[in-house]
Amino acid sequence: MPDWVPLPRNLRYRRAVDRLDGFVDRLLAERRENAVAGGSDLLSVLLAAGMDDTEVRDHLVTFLLAGHETTALALTYTLYCLATHPDEQAAVAAEVAKLDDRPGMDDSLPRTGRAIREAMRCYPPVHLVMREAVADDTVGGYHVPAGSLVLCSQWATHRRPGLWDDPGSFRPDRWEANDRPQYAYFPFGAGPRICIGRRFALLEARLVLARLLQTFRVEPVTEELDLAASMTLAPAGSVEVRLRER
Image: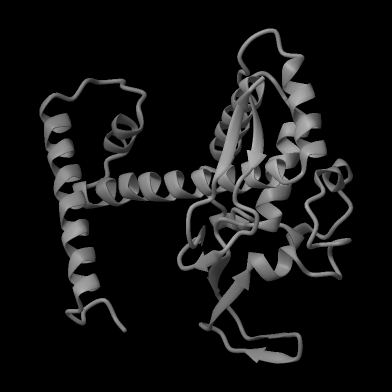
């Protein structure tokens, strides 16, 4: 059902969008009145780029919405996978235990990074992206006319047996080698429109996970995930774990 149909959920959505737009518009007006040259925060950079208020607002909302839920989902799935695979959790915990202090940007933490990448392979927060065909093509025997919208499924690709050995299993060690086709793994999309915040998202997830496992041991409470696919691949209900101090 299209968004313009006045169903209760569509009306609630429209009111929420209007409230968010109004908040951002007030923020922009205040910043323009009290602009400080040379500011390095995101809003200052966008304003200095010469964009109008609508463009700046759209970029801010994109960063807010795209950068919040997806990273939270990646951490949720990583914690779930490590809770249900205690040997893998122990390996990551042993890595972060070697740090002298809290994890920082300069700590590479390869095991921690592999666990996050593998969780995002098993449960990609963004499970579907769309691309427009720029020319006629044939894919898998199907004719794709120019201008067609092509749906690319991370969920299906990340679990395809021809691309992955034992694709249904959580195995972070598979990332020790880089021996698969380029587009077998694309949790952030791919090509010129790949997610602009991917490096920050992975850094943030790695530091949060490392800090958690420095302090806590994670035990499973939720045994099986029940997933609900919409714009993102989110749990249909809560994903519960138990934290025990180390």
